[in-house]
Image 1 (cartoon, rainbow, N blue to C red):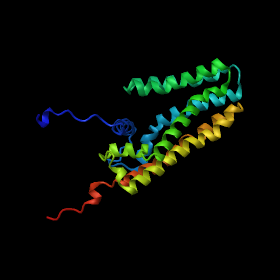
Image 2 (image 1 turned 30 degrees about the horizontal axis):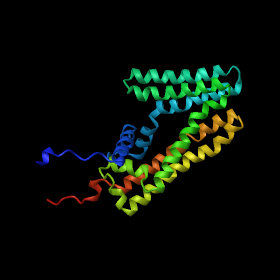
Image 3 (image 1 turned 90 degrees about the vertical axis):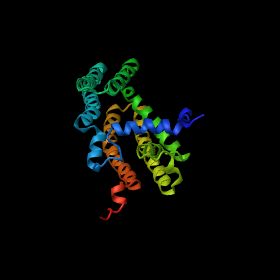
Image 4 (image 1 turned 30 degrees about the vertical axis):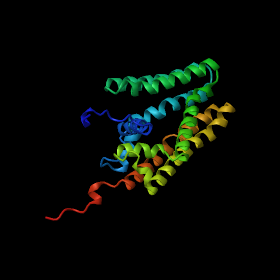
Length: 243
């Protein structure tokens, strides 16, 4: 049998996860292999002005209208979902991938449907609470078992695969980055869950906004800087060739 006849080995779980995480990071503009400033990377990760508006306006509209007039609940929920629908239409007209464009709208509609079904405005925030619990657990477990999700994604993007695991410095840095991300998600959960359980909708919505982008941005910046420090560009590592 010639080498051309050999089938490639099946992809490992780390390769599959790395490709998924790395692909998502690359689409968000978080590719450490590219030469970009930290400011540009963070701005790209937020999605620019449109991303900021998409993250803030639906929740802000819901909290504001609910605070002014809790009843009828459908009013505040309808405006919130309506804004998400407008952003989705804008994305689709600009040829964004349907999955990316529809994701936010589906999440907003599902949350609103749950709140209407139960009659509790606080239930509009249940998907966010679940997301924080799932993401926090995933990052923490990955750090504890030595397969940091940050390391897996960075390894894929930098062509290092699982090589980072044999480098003590990289392994330690990626472990602490994963723990930092887990801490962010669990901090949100720890603050917001008691408010949800006591039905403090206005405080819950306000703190969701406060603990959203303002905490996400600095952690994205730190993650980017650490990965770039661990994988310096070849041009900065290799001395210029002499004529």
